[in-house]
Image (cartoon, rainbow, N blue to C red; front, side, top):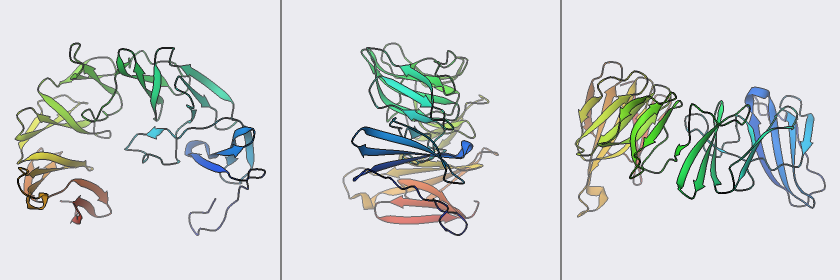
Length: 311
């Protein structure tokens, strides 16, 4: 481990007795613990808990710790920083370990008819995506006890047309076609109806989502925390990408009929002031948008462009 200020070595961990180790690192920032899972031992996998400050080994066990897919507004997928030490090495069971001792705290069995496809490591919950005989479901567990949360019941799992919602909200599926019909809060109260629109992006901080109505030609801004009449603003073309900033929203759309190369397409970048509820549009093409210090970087085909400033 290196010191962040001058990159000098703080401590080293040497793996002994393993000729071809495979190492997976987990950092539990809140506890000051670095957990390291090392594979390739003749007797199986071993995990170690290390004091991040001193490098002292605190515990050792034979678990295979997982790197769950983290919430996108906290940790990039595959990032070693995790909220909890989880083990999900088979299709039916997930376990959580105390980062300070390595001891098992709880274990959850998905049942004999369902299998675990995905694990999401969140602040105070662990979210499981299950495949069951009647379809795909999401089950939310209390991260401290492993108990299934009654206020956040099992629901249809996410799919590419169903982006993650802010924490505390979930989709309510239509009983016939299983497509999202509404968004509900933790109490089950519907805060947005989706019968004629699809959600395309959400922001966890502001609890806002944007939706594309069935007739297109406009984008709808939906406030989940304070439900009011959604803000509608016109756009040209089809939705391409979007980015929520502190008090702004950027939306990119593209107009392209497929008869010409994509390089001949036209685009529009719409900037929405989330406080004032106003918007303005300008020409521009973007299939991806990411924040960077002082502005936004956008990508389209093999071209990268930037927007600078606060407006």
